[in-house]
Amino acid sequence: MKLPADLRGFTLEQLKQLADELRAETIHAVSHTGGHLGAGLGVIELTIALHYVFNTPDDKIIWDVGHQTYPHKILTGRRDRITTLRQAGGLSGFCRREESEYDAFGAGHSSTSISAALGMAAARDFAGKDNEVIAVIGDGAMSAGMAFEALNNAGSLGKRLIVILNDNDMSIAPPVGAMSAYLSRLISSHPYRSLRTMAKNVANKFPAPIMRAAKNAEKYVRGVVTTGGSLFEDLGFYYVGPVDGHNLDQLLPVLKNIHNEKGDVPVLLHIVTQKGHGYSPAEASDDKYHGVNKFDVATGQQKKAIATSPSYTEVFGKTLVKLAEQDDKIVAITAAMPSGTGLDIFAESFPEKMVDVGIAEQHAVTFAAGLAAEGYKPFVAIYSTFLQRAFDQIVHDVAIQNLPVRFAIDRAGLVGADGATHAGSFDITYLATLPHFICMAAADEAELQDMLVTMAQIDDAPSSVRYPRGNGTGVALPEHGSPLPIGKGRILKKGEKVAILSLGTRLGEAEKAAEQLEAKGISVTLADARFIKPLDTQLITQLLEQHQLLITVEEGSSGGFGAMVLEFAANANVLHHANIKALYLPDYFIEQGVPFDLYETAGLNASGIVATVLSALGN
Image 1 (cartoon, one colour):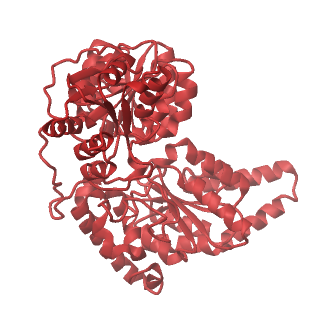
Image 2 (cartoon, rainbow, N blue to C red):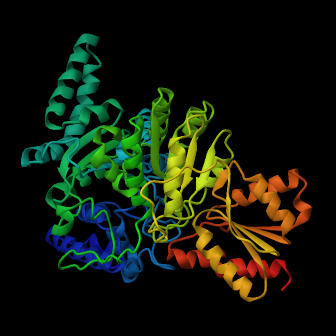
């Protein structure tokens, strides 16, 4: 088969065989490319069932986040390209509208599917169409407030909408058995729903106390067999489930019933699945197989490069432990990413001081603000791209009140295979414009350690430090870091003609550029800004007055550090001393690829810096 239409003539046994083949194909593909494995293996049967029952792409499937969509891509005409996943010029690791008409909505962040699906359902009704809209969302993504906002709105609007809750943590429902599966088929069927509608109409003829009693009786009976369903019923959904998401004998008839009964009430189908289902290494360790490197299919052994230096994430986690050993006011906060941010290291030593709020970045920030208001020292560790989700809370709850919340911003800059949705491109711009904020960028792992020590001592303002994904540069790490003077950079090498002012981990490439320029007879001063805010205006003035050209380099979007340097130079009337060129990420979203290559394309590697200098000097 090549497209979903091909499988709609399959028998049940053929669909089961297809599930086995699709699972093997997914494992094979990810073993060659790396990527998100466990989530996709958990929805093999669901993916087949959705494309079998519904008329995709006319019927819209909106996958939340997109980690689980590799099987979907294989079934929708992309099998021949599946081994290009997350590679430069290849398939995205997430849904992407430009990639296929079967990708109804793009997403790399969680908890957006119900909102998008409701918008599509409203558009369908405005246009007088009759297609189905299905949102697939995981139980983890349901911890975000946005998901509940969408559920509430969907229930009140009464649009025809199907939400499939993929519960792979057994966090809501008890184990699924034959009886609950039978009851789910019954509850989703036309006769039951018609009888229920008729009963409601009859009940409306009776006095209010009798009508309330009848409704309560039905809710009690449904609550007994569908634990958790009453919550969604109260939000205005018709709840069906739980259903075994790996059993096509159960899944197909329920989906057919829901599809055939086109009511005006949104439906929530609750399925229970297992991450990594059908591949024993992933079943045994679903956290390690959420995102994987290339691996050996037979053993499950991942192929990891031997690290010669600790990762920035590891340095953060270990440094925070040392700081907490000296200061009992330190509290660590993560939004469902303890291992991704290094806070699993902190939790081993201080489990009571590590708080995982779930996929709820907005709550994480305001929760931290509450801690800071009571004299504690919260460190909020969130990826740059996910911190964007909490910008209003950063402004309203932290900055305006000048509360000393400390933000550890991991995955700053380009992240490689995850592409545009996960790139940390904008935190410089959206934080450095806020009054009171102290913003830093580490050039190496030793500097990160020093900046964390500095943040622990800042009690009169919010602060942040940004650092990239991956391993450090291999510089020596002292046992303990030292606090830095606020708002002061450093000069690493003095020259006469050109000054390069680097922010963050582009410093290594700036050093290479300086060497190449010196080889061409161009004398270069190399400086490390360290601070985005407050700017080291004394250093900038010195570099402008003593050089013909100043180049700023940063791993962020336009409007960031370079713009702040230009604005200062213009307002301070020192712009006339030297020409200024700002190097930053280009004004478009950069897709997946190897980080070195992506930075080369962006002109932020040594060759790009050298080319910019030579062009500015007229060489």
